[in-house]
Image (cartoon, rainbow, N blue to C red):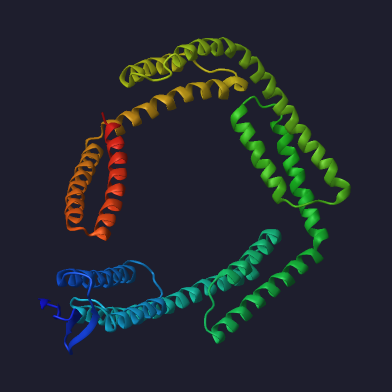
Length: 409
């Protein structure tokens, strides 16, 4: 008879496991030595341990649903109870009981999270209603207000639901706010003639300002002033149809005079900048000789000199500025990329990690080779197969790790 702390094999080849309730039969073994029988049933026990380890990890580190976890625990509890395995089955049962307790706490946590989500949803919907009520009472930009109310309704639909009484009361307030805004907007448009007259007066003032600025040569501030006038023009609303087109023609005509004069000045200035563009073309020819980057330090020094020459030349015509600067930027990006690649290649921490990985894999392969040799001598075909598969995987990993380490050479 052969035994270990958790099981035994009697002279008839019957295999028993020891539990808190006593011994029970888990199988029989007639084909080999009793030690092989115990080893076989211990592997079945190890498989159960692995399953429970994985379930523990999923429960503790993922958002596995409690119902799904409970089903898995019940299945494993049944497997442990009826297991044809040799090992400390009682400890596995205790671990499953511990997981059951953990699930109970997880359910409480989920309940708290749901309550918090409902509270947050209520806050969101109360904020939506408050903003809708403010728009209904205060907003005078009808298009913006109507669009914002539509957005608030979409936000309401996207938010989580709260309890029915609160949901109903808040929705009623939101609907009331929307109706109030619609009534105010209708009242506004019923007085549209008065608003159109106010718009005409405002646009008359804007046209006068635009015409007064048309002869300015202060290009930057005046262009900004025209942008502001355009913004105010759009905000002023529409005047009566018979005067709107005439006001717009005068307003646009004043702008056209200013911008045509500015364009003429800029064109003349661009002619003066063409020589600068030619000089920068020559600088770019020198810059592009840096590529491809072979010596990072030399490339950086050459680029610094080129950048200094570039800045000293001055401005170029607007129509060639982007193209010239884009060519220089490509060189700068290539040098920067080379610097980053050089840093990664010489990074001592990354190299140390790569070396540690290679060392660890080589050690693992040596251990597996020893295990394979022992299994072959013992004639354990399954162990031989397992060891060969593990060795194949480790050798593939080692090959990849060695390639990574070689990149640091």
